[in-house]
Amino acid sequence: MFSIEAKSKPSVFEALFIVILVISIISFAIGKFGSTPHIPILLSIILLIFYGLLKRVPFKVLEESMKSGAISGIGAIYIFFLIGILISSWIVSGTIPTLLYMGFTLVSASFFYAIVFIITAIIGTAIGSSLTTVATVGVAFVSIAGAIDASIALTAGAIVSGAFFGDKMSPLSDTTNLAASIVNIDLFEHIKNMSWTTIPAFIISGVLYAVLSPSIAGVNNTTIEYYQASLQDTNLVHWYAIVPLLVLIVCTFIKVPAFLTLIISSLVALFLSIFHTSLSISDYCAILYSGFVSETGVEVIDSLLTRGGISNMFFTIMLVVLSLSMGGLLFALGIIQTLLSKIESLLKSIGALITGTAFTAIGINVVVGEQYLSILLTGEAFKQKYRELGLQSKNLSRVMEDAGTVVNPLVPWSVCGLFIASTLNVSVIDYLPFAFFCLLSPILTILFGWLNLTISKT
Image (cartoon, rainbow, N blue to C red):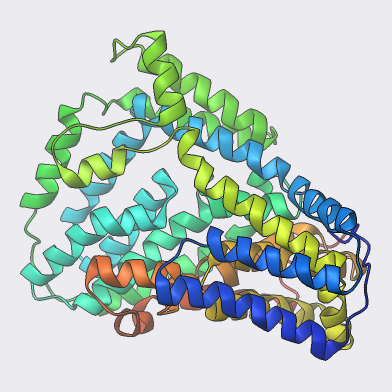
């Protein structure tokens, strides 16, 4: 978006007032009225248009800036279409059901909190959705914790940590795809680069959960066994169902572009589904467009497997288009440039730049309560500065996720925070101290920046 030329030069006070007003509209609508982000963002766009007209910026210029902003996200939109297809194909091929079955198998081990963390991480990565993971297996684990007198708050912290590990690292996750697309890097290059901070955070979190786990000789596996039996009854759990995942991993290692990798893995999955389903071509078309519909009668399993399809990506796609259009207006009106120019003198070193980026992502999460906007606005605001310091774009996308994606569930009035608190019946303040992975991720990314560790330069 830095290619969008500023058509006005507002004062710092004026730019700050406009940004605070926009943020207030979005945060108030989401926090007070429970609105989806789309409506307040659209209202903010209208506000910015009228502001631009008052500044005597021609409407044609404002319209073109919105178009330019939206066009910058076209790569992400194509990927989102393919993600919808991949999820559908991975369910019908049995890949996701098999991964879920394998994950549930681990719960019989000791170290309850650590196992909860690992299983939710596996399932979150398999389905690419943190909130779905929390609302399904997360609810089940909270029930198990109550039955064995384990800490509900600590269990919730482990659930949130594992679910958002998956949301951050899964190639099926919309936030992961969005972060990579905003800075124009390959999806799997982004995931690989995130592992430098994510794996240490995962290991440290796992150790902490293991140490804090109560001394329990055994866990009542009745519920877990019931879920496993329900998965087997779908006739979607097969050893060969892991092949699409292996194909995806191999394509990643040989550096096949993400667009082609998703297509290849989806085609392999659809081919394998022939061996255990008798679907017609029209059935496949319906599943790829509308998603797979599970009808086992088991609510948890049906929630996990009723997913995918192109149409189910429209919510995210529309949010991306609106957010980027708003970003285009903010740049065309010179608002972002004015604010960045005031802090530019403070961002002369790599450590300072990464710290500034992280606090911007955290700040947007805290004020607006929306992780998509945290990623979008942070990425667009700092892209040029990373180039000026000779840093590769993947450094920026990593910070956006380390301090953007995983911080949202720690904010009580955020979209994720409100959802998780109501779903698990545990307040954000109660589980926040125990969401170790979410707390460690921004700390590690800032620390690595100051120590100049794993920082890729051009």
